[in-house]
Image 1 (cartoon, rainbow, N blue to C red):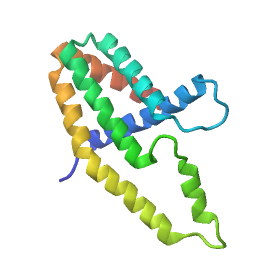
Image 2 (image 1 turned 120 degrees about the horizontal axis):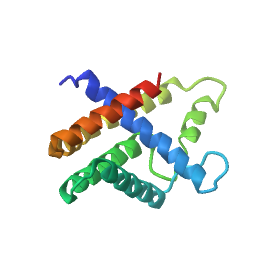
Image 3 (image 1 turned 30 degrees about the vertical axis):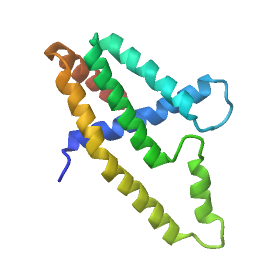
Image 4 (image 1 turned 90 degrees about the vertical axis):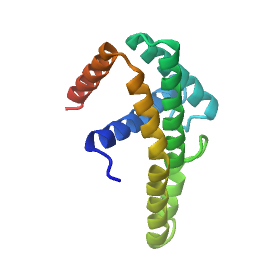
Length: 156
């Protein structure tokens, strides 16, 4: 089944935003250099983001719960893509060039694993995103579209 282009962009945008926010959260904790976020930090950051979005969109309890489920699904997909919290994806990439030649077989397996993770987790993410969006009132949906349009212009 083909995923519509805007859904793909939204999913990758959300994943990228999650990774970016994870980096900001790690930096805000006073860490120097790149350090993976642990599960406790990821859960706390997700709770802050849910609260922030809930406040901006004036969400009711049901909508906030659906947003939290979406956050859980996105974090699960990010974990499947990046590895468990506390692991360093750079080490995995560095292992490809540890020997005298590039390990093409391992690189192909790594890519296949990541693609499989996206394929396996995407239906749950799409369902959670659809459930959340469909629970929004028309004025909230308009706000979401406006926020996305604003963020699209900021990316250039």
